[in-house]
Each structure stands twice: as C-alpha cells, then as structure tokens.
Length: 459
Image (cartoon, rainbow, N blue to C red):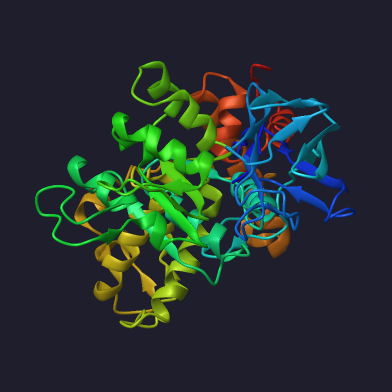
C-alpha cells in the first residue's frame, strides 16, 4: 500500500504528490535488477511474497524492510542470519538518506526516492463506471479517479450520506489491476462492536464464547483484491491499532491466534464524519488517519451539483428500464417535476433521488413522471415559484412577433438576470458563495454579473 504526501479534495487541490521508491541491485545475484515500488513497507528477502525477492543464498527468507513514514525512511533488519549493513556497520534499524547503498547478505542495494508530481485536471468524461456528472465538481472527482484507480493507493472517500461513496470504491476496484480479484464490503456502523474485530480479522476456534469454528476475516477473504470499509469513523478506538498494522505490515492476526498471516489487500475507506475533528477529539488515531488518507476524495452533496440532476435522472431512468422490474417506458420528468427537483434541497443526496425515481415509476401512467407520482413529503416541500418577469420589448412588439430564436434569446436573457439577482441577494452579494450554489466557477459567474450590471462583493 502506497503513501502520498498530500490529499485531494473535489474543490481546490490540483496535484497529487506520489511518494515512490526505487531500489536497484548493484552487486550480487540480482545485479542489474531495478524495482520501482509504491508501498509504505518494502519487504526484502528470498521468500516469494517479498516485494524485492533476491536469489542470494545468504539472504534470509524475510531479511529486511524499508519503511517510509512521515518522519523519514527507515531500513530495518528483521532478524536475518547474515545481517544488514550500511557501509561496514551492521544495523538493526537506521534512517536512510537518498541514494544510500546498503547490503543484505552478499547483495548490495541502493535506495532512492522516486517521487512524482501528477497534475489532476477535470476529466473530459461525464461518467466513471457507475458514477455520472458533467459539472466541474464531479469531473474533478473523475479526474482524480482516472489517475488513482489503476494504482494500489489507499483511498479515503468523504461526503454526506447518499453521495455515492460505495460507488466510488467499486469504481476504483473495477479500474484497477485487481478487478478480477475479490471486492469485499464491511460497514463499521452496521456491526456490533464486539463482532467488528472477528469480522475484519477472523478468529480461531474457542477464541471466545460462540467461536465454535475457525473463521477467516474479511482481510483474508479480500486477499489479492480490495476491501471497502464503510463508516470508518465508527471503528472502535481499541481496534484502530490493529487496522494500522494491516496497513503498515500487510499482515493480520486472527482473534485467539499466535501467528500472523500475510495479506495483499487494497483498502478504500469511507466516512461521513470529519476525521480531522475526530482526531482532535481523541476518538480517532492520527497515524491511522494519515495511513488511510493517502488520497482523500470529497464527494459533493447533490445540492452542490444541481446541474447534474438532469443527467442523473436520465441515468436512473435508463437503469430502471433495464432492471428486472423495468421502467414502464418512462423517459423523463414533467416540467413542474423538473422545477421541483431543481429547487429541492436533497438531504439524502443521490440515494434520495434514486429512491424518489423508483417510488414514482409504479405510479406513472405515461412517459413522464408527474407531481402526482411523487411522495407526499416531496410534493409538500414544493416552493411557490416567484414570477419571472417578461422581457422588456419595444412598444407594439410581442414575443410572437419575433423570430423564434430572438424570442427565445430575450426570454433567456431576462431569466438569467432574474436568477442572478435572486442568487446574489440570497448570498448577501458574496460572489464566491453564490458561485458554489450555482455550480459555476467564480470567473463565469463574475462575467455574467458584470454583463447584467448586478452589484456584488468581489470576495
């Protein structure tokens, strides 16, 4: 599992700093070999499952490891027979400087950082696996996933309930080299505290009352694949060191066991909590947070990406049409439903939108969903729409006397101004907050405000 020095959110950051390492063999049985590795912990030895497997008979099965952390990079001997040396000095544990030469058995290796800065730009696509969105916020998320999914990077997905965190985890797995290996889901919030440890790490027979048989934990089940740990903020504090060990050492110990088992698992975690606040409050370990937040992706709430609602509706209707129950030939929304969807706050986010669509389909007779098909609670939330002023036209001129294009342009122009006046007024002239609500970038909305001569605060 790899490490990264910066985290990425859906708004703001534009670069990923990958901390990679290169180890070169300059003398010994593997002379000329070169390894470029993204893992936090690099295992060296003659055993097949090491990151750097050496053919030197003087090298132990598990000889040494290189651990790259926040404080620096450590070379650690793992109790080898013939020792680990830096120069003429046999070492048990030492910090490595860049381009340091060291020896394990009769093999001479050189360690070098191979960091890489990757620019992240919004994707040109409006879909990524099961995720859809053409607004800037989601295309930035897609841009990050396109870069990160093919790697083994650990990912932390944050966002409100219903924003699609599990979809991100599945998309990450499906676009990785592990796609044909297991994808395992565990919800920390759904399991009782007493069973979390057994579920994740497994147990031996007789480890506790009711443990009548040996059981593999989900990390073992996911070996070679990906494990998605949902609601990671709910993980009991006393179990967090054990998860940290899996992330750092790639090994698990079942409850009641004396030996550890090696696992090769990519971790994607998710939470709707602010883990930084949880760390400050002492409810979440800081070191575990940094191991999980190798890449941190924040999913925007649906109210922050209203421009995506039509595309999401189209996607959900298409999916319903091809589901087992069928979509009953429904193709879209009635105008009044579109207006309601545009104005609604969507506290349950995309999950709520999906539930509303699924609930409405059986009550829809034609090809469009009407207000009568919607849940009563949603209909009751419908605001009274303010009147949109008709465009100011010269005397003796009506809309119908104009060519269609000119009449439409006049209406759009007046609607645009009316919308902007209301938007900027609701945000007390603050263009930055108004832009976020409108789902537009700041420069675009500033240009429109100047075009319509609408006063605002340039903050």
